[in-house]
Amino acid sequence: MDPADSDLIAAVLQGDTASFEPLICKYSPKLFATARRYARRESEVEDIVQEVWAKAFQKLSSFRGDAPFEHWLMRMAVRTCYDFLRGHRRNRESTFSDLSDAESDWLDRFVADPEHADEQADAARSLIHRLLAQLSPPARLVITLLEIEERSVKEISEMTGWSAALVKVRAFRARAQMRKRLAQIHREKYL
Amino acid sequence: MDPDQLHSKLLAAARKLPPDARVPDAFPGRVMASLVGRRLQDDAWSLWDRSLWKAAAAATALCLVLNFWPISSWNDPGPLTLETTLVSLAEQLSDSW
Image (cartoon, rainbow over all chains, first blue to last red; front, top):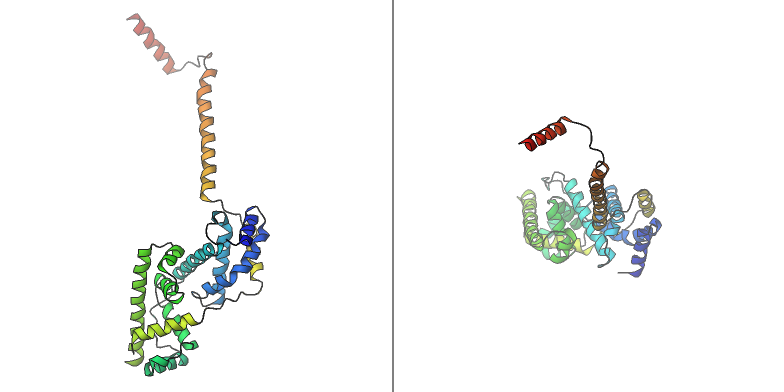
C-alpha cells in the first residue's frame, strides 16, 4: 500500500479526522468517474460519492491494509452504486421511439454502413446509456464492469461480493437482455 | 441491422470515452463537514471483545453474589414462614416415627 495512504489512515484511526481530507482529494476523481457510469444527474452522482466517503470513514477500522486502499474504496463504491441502481429503478419499459435526431441519424448511418459507424460519436455513447438504463440493476452493473471497464470475473466477484458463478450467470442474462433491447430498437425503428 | 454488431459498436463507443472524473468545487470540504460528529465504527472483533468482557464481568459478579449471600444468613435462621414451619413439623413427625 502507498506509504502516504497508510500514514493518513493510521492518523485518522488515532483520532486526527483532518488526515482524511487528503484521501478524499486523491481518490474522489476515480469515485466520480465510477458514479457517473450509473447516475446521470450530477446531484445523484455527488450523493453517491458522498455516501461512499461516509461509509469509508465509518468503516476505516475494518481496512486491513493487505490490499491497496484504492481497491477497498472501489469495492465500496461499486456496492454503493449498485444500491443506488436498485433504489432508483425507473420504468425500464420505455420505448426507443423518443430517440434524439442525433441518435436516430447515427443508427441510420450504422444500418447503411456498420463498419464505418463512428464509435467516437456522442450519439453512440448516449445510445448505450439509454440501453443500459433499461437493464435490471445487476445486468447493468455486470455489463458495465465486464464489457465496458473490461474487468475480469474474479475482479467483479471481489468488488460485488458475488460468487464467480453468479457473475457469469448474471453476465449471460445481461447479454440476453441487451440483445432483446437491441432487437426492440430494430423493430420500433425499421419495421 | 445486425443486433450483435450494433451491440459491439455501442460497447466500443462506451469504452473509448471514459466518464468524466471532474470533482465539483469544494467537494472535499463538504464531505469533511458532513463527517463532523461521526464516530469511527469499531470493527467486528472489537465489538465482540467488549461484549464478551462485559458478559464475563456480569457473570463473575453474579457468582460472587450467589456464593457469598448464604454466608450472611447462616447465623440468622430467617423469618418464620409457612414453608419453614411445615418442614420443621414434618421433620419432627418423621423423627417420632
